[in-house]
Length: 539
Image (cartoon, rainbow, N blue to C red; front, top):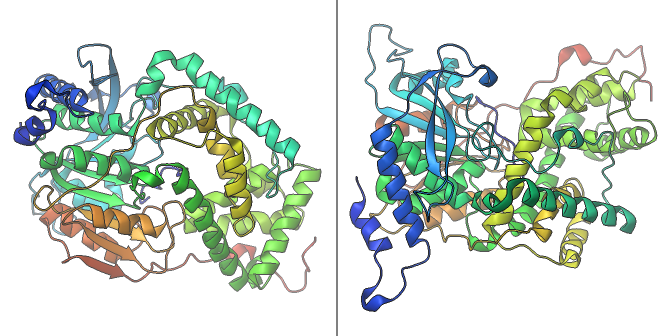
């Protein structure tokens, strides 16, 4: 399920552990995952004893001096905790103790707040910097803000599946109704990428999974000296956060699930991606409606249909002559896909499209063009994304199934459907063993109350996922941002949402079962792009 990291605004439980890992009487084999649970307990005890030696961050992290960095060792394979270890990089800014509303009041520390931005493949190393943002200052006063790079990401046993120099292919096409020859070409690329993952990672490839991400989180908790975990996960981070809540419910203090993935095992991950493609069509329509309402600014059409025609005209022109030699229809689609995640991108993307159609390609090249200097990081993120999702569950191995399902879907949701296919198709040819997804579910009294956040029109993690997670985590509370679609809403522009987050993380206070917030204001168009009536647009 493709979901880029949201903008940053964007010894307890031993009885449960024993019950889960003890072999049944009569010599019957232990339950699946028992060895991994024992291994997690071993690794967590070791990490608790060792702690994390925080100090100056490595230059490669490009973090300011007030951020501290360290590492925590986790088993590559939790079934063998004394075997090969890998190191995860961790970043931290200590609690400020400063009440932003009362300079004379010293705020007591509540512990560490660990954050994951999603992906799979996203790094949280920059998260501690968020404490200077006004919406986060109250949390930064009470908590050490802790980010980390999950296994495979950045310097945490980095994973790669191909030479980053070959990762960006620009300009590229983005056909909404691909030809048979184009499909064959993409199938060959998917097979090559899967082979590359196996060749570069070897036997370690099978250990990049969501379950291991959840186990790593418990080892990190112990290394931080936290008896119970306070965690905020966004997007994909909600999924392995939910796995953590299921595996280690008595290790949970407070958890925020921001823009929740549907955790139903039947949805992981093939069907979740189909649902995502369908939802993006609705969000693309929202964006086009917004552009149409500001036709006096952008001149792209006063209806969603006319805006679509402007977009199609730009894509056709880019197919004939890529902007700057590197922005084709594929890059255009990628840039506008990000606008489906975050509506604060809308003015910039609309301005770039408008200016391109009027003869100025510079903004579009700047926003949509590939950045070779970031190729290594991008390929690393893509490799981790691919490995985790392919390892997590079974995928159709016959392309005819993908072709049938997505051809049908593309008739009503052409915007993202085929791009999502090509992103995930290596999973059809994956060389590593597949896991059975854990059934995320907790019963009465097993888990402390948790907070789920969801925007009603979120495309990356459709709203139904939040409803499913809410039903599966006993005692959870769902806060919905109505008629809004930004992906990742904690600490954003909605004070109602932020009020619920602060009340929960600072005071442990939650609504009874559900709450709703009015949508945050839509973005304002960029005024300097407003049309001059005396100068008709050039097309």
